[in-house]
Length: 166
Image (tube, rainbow, N blue to C red; front, side, top):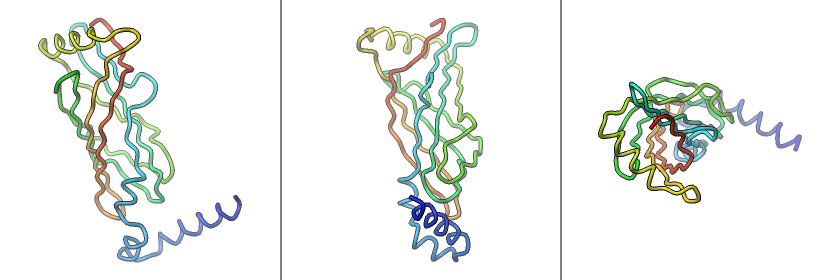
């Protein structure tokens, strides 16, 4: 365990001094992309709220298991409540250190019109307590790193949808 930790530390330090072309050869961008996880957070990932301004909130968690610093440039999403309901983007730039998870919230909020509210309500009411319906989110996250641009696509399903006043 000690030798592995020392070895990883030395390899990480070596990456900082390598020329870019050699670094890309030793650490291919395709491998780094596989080491980035984009998912909905575990605690209340999706909230649907009614009221004067009906809205949907989604919270994401990004884990960087690679050995380099990455920066989230943008996160594009399409959310389905049974059918395509809305599209959106998170445009906040967030730096994520190697082998860590985002500490600040990657958060998306959008207001809903009357047709979207009716469609979401109809879809969520079609589930049963033992068999809740799942929403689907198609995510494309773009990251900037020393290796260049990285793109991570995910298809997420979530049954933990919190409803307030809808």
